[in-house]
Structures are given as C-alpha cells and as structure tokens.
Amino acid sequence: KFAAHGTKLASLNRYLDQTGMPPVPFSVSGNADITNATYLLDGVVADIDGNRIALDGTVTSVTGLVGTDLKIEVAIPDLRQAGHLVTELANLPELPDEPLTLTTRLAIDGTGFQIDNLEGTLANAEASIDGLVGPPPGFVGTDLTIDSDGPNASLFTAFTGVTVPVAPFKISGRIQRTEDLFLFDRVAVQLGGHSVSLHGSLGEAPRLVGTDLELHASGDSTALIAELAGFRKLPDHPFRVSGRFKGTPERFATDGFEIMLGESDLKGSLEVDIRAKPTVTATVTSNHLDLSHYLKQLEQVIDDEPEEGATPGTTSGSTAISDKPIDFSPLRRADAEIDITVGTIQFPLMVLSEVELVAKLNDGRLEIERLAAIGQDQGHVSGSMVLEPKDDRYFLRTDLEARQLRLDIAGSTVARMDQPPIDIDINLEAVGATPHELASTASGAIQLVIGKGTMDSKVLDLVTADILLTLLNSFNPFAKQDAATEMQCGVALLSIADGLATLEPMAFQSDKMTMLGDGRIDLGTEKLNLEW
Image (cartoon, rainbow, N blue to C red; front, side, top):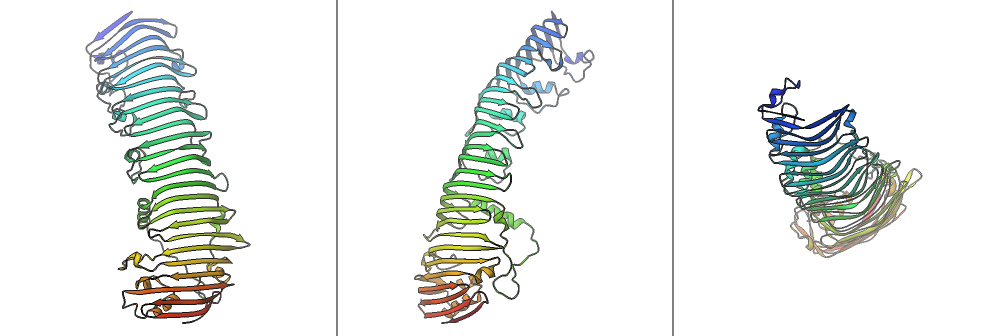
C-alpha cells in the first residue's frame, strides 16, 4: 500500500532522473503487489493538477507488455491545460479546451491490444469502441467496432492535422485488417451534410489486390472535399458518388457507378485492364453533363503553357493536299469498346442534346458504329465510320448525315435562325497513308443543300480554300460591300470515283443572281475544270 502527494510535481525530477515535469500539485495512492516482472495494481489513483487516472489489474514488464490486463479510468477537466502540463515531455499540438473522460479494459497478448468496451467523451462527443488493435507497424489482426457521434467535429482538428469544420458527426461500423486487406463492414461516416459509407475489401497499396468495395458518398457541397483533398479548382456543387469497385490499378472494374455533381450526372459501368495492351470497356449514360467549367480551365492551362517553336503542317511542296504521313499508331496502342448516351452536354458556347457514341477499337481498327447529336437550333448530325489497317496504309469508310445546320459566325449581325439551313450527306471510301493518298483513292459522293435564309458575308472570312472563295465571290461579287446575301436555295452534288470528282449539278440562287455550274476535279493531280 502506498500514498504520496505534494504541491509541485517538478520536485520529483531529481528522484526520477527526469526533467520537464510541471510545478503543479499531485497525489498518487493505491495497492501494488510486485511478483517477478508482474505488477498487480489495486485501486491505484493518480491526480495531477485535477487530471485523474485510475488503474486496476496487471501490468507486466516483459517486451511489449504482453500479459498486461488493466481496467482504466481517465478524467481530464481541460484537455488543453493537460497538454500544456507535458509540454516539456512531449511535442503535442494545441488540444481543444474541453473535458475528456475514458473508461476501458485493456489486455495485451501476442495478437495485439484487446480493447473491451471503451467508452469515451470529449466535450459533448461520445465514442464506444470494442475489439482488437493488431501490433505495429502493420496492425495486422485489427478488428474494431466503432460507434461515435457528437455535435462538433472540429474538436478533432488537432488530432488529425486537417482543418475539420464545425459540424455534427457520426462514425459507425466494423474495420478489420488482415495480411493483405482492409475489411469494412457497413462503415458509415457523417459530417454535417456529407456522408460516406463503405462495405467490402480494400487491397493494400499500391496494387490494391483483392479490392471489392461498395462506396456511397454524398454531400451538399464539394468545398469540404476540395479542402481535404487539395482540389483548389473543384466547382462547389452538391454531389453524390456510388458504385462497386473491384480489382487493382492495373485491372479494375466499376459496376453500377453513379456520379452526380450539381446538375450533371453520370452512371454506368467501366472495365480497364492495362497489364499489357490497355483495354477499356465502358457503358455510360447521362441526363445532363455541364463541361463548360472544365473546358474553360483546360483552355486556361493551354494558354498558360509556354509556346514552343511552331511546326507547321506543311505539304511536300508539290501538292495542296498534304503528303505528310498520318500517324495512325495511337490506334494500335489500346483496345476499347464504348457506348455513351447523353441527354444534353453543355459546352462553353453551345449545347448538344441526344448525344450518342458507340465505338470499338481493336488491333488498330476503329469502328464508330453510331455517332449522333442535336444542336441548339435543332440541327442534327448522325453517321458512322470505319478506319482499319490495310497493309501499310489505312482504309476509310464514312457515312455522315447533317441536317438543318447553321453556321456559327463570330460577330455576325444575322440571327442564327435567320441564316440558311444546310444539309450535308457524305458517303466516302478511301485508302491511303497520307491525306493526299486518301483523296486520290476516294470514291463516293458529297451532297450539299442550302435552304432559304440570310447568309452573312462574314462567311468569306471563314473560307481559306481558293476554289470555294472564288465560287462565293462569283456568286455575289458585292459580298465585301453587302453585309448579307439573301439565299433562296442551293444544291451541289460531288460524285467521286477513284479520286476523280464530278460536280453535277451545282445550282445556287440568291436575291441578286442565279448560278449554275459543273465540272471535274482530279484529287490526285489536283487539276480542275469548272464552269459556271
């Protein structure tokens, strides 16, 4: 049986071969039975400046304290003041100035630290923990059940090193640690208007082998996520993320994922395998995608990049159509199968609706089975394309249909809906390794139909091809003086066989004149003979 007390704990420094103990009142009392390397404690109570700890049970002095079995009670009226008491003994962060209580039974054996019915409070926050903490450094064998809640999560800022907002919180669930996995059994975390739930397994970093995890996360703002993760330019919107994630960084799959950010949403499935040749399989649907914010950021990044010496896309010098080989090698670097359907996509300057893309990429063969979209003025585009290797060249087949298109001319004084609608049909096949080879082997047809409307003369500024510019100037020789041309109708059909294009018919009518024409263009030699 022992008892000791004093007005200054610091007076014991010289007896305990210690420095830095504070000059505050203290007392300690209880019963101790010491046998070999075991201390049997009975009713041991220590009080340092009002901070109290009570111990009952067995403490061993063997390596790792294996065999220790203690009942522990802790009562601290002000955690911040208690932290100041040990400033000279330990480097602690600034702790909250709130009361702390803790009761538990702690048993240490070869498997780790057994925590039996730990009950703790910090201010108005409460926590209950049961289970086993595995031995460090890997903590393998950990199996803990946690239930904690409180009105103010910011109390934990000092312990986590992360600025946690003032908000109610709740944590519950079971967490286990095996040799290779972290196991989550209905683990749920709530922080104010944010929540995260996990169920399943997470493989050990970096390869994450064995991961099979269901994730659900939501919140009324992304500001907290941006702060915790360091994403400075994440737009601040309500969000929701859910799905099942399986695999490793080299091979993973998501099943039934759903993402919502503000008014944008995305859901579907994704499989990725990059162990050898990358393979991607994706099925994605969306009601609405707002890409305007991200594309503006991308434009800013591009604008901020230092300019390098320009490498113009020059031709060989003898042809207007480039003889520079097209680099098709990226088509051989990965395989993919993609099915995307989007209700509306918001770009910085336009909106597309009913967007569809179904495409396959396999061993260098790209097939766009379907591409479709409707513009903001009900103009729409649909089509398909095949691009596949053929010896050392590529075979191209395209079938494109565009209806009710209207030119978007910067600074135009003509309203978009007043501009003439344009219909285009393109059906072409070609083989080649350069743009010039593709043009000289092309077969098919291109048809252009222009409806009634007002054509802004600024369209001349968009045309760089000498042939088209000559045609437009001939159609309205006063275009440079006239702000607009009243178009009545127009049609042109370009039939192509083995690189020889025949223009017949070509007819355009405006409020100033009617123009008829025909002719031929040899896309191989680039010789033309046009009459109008």
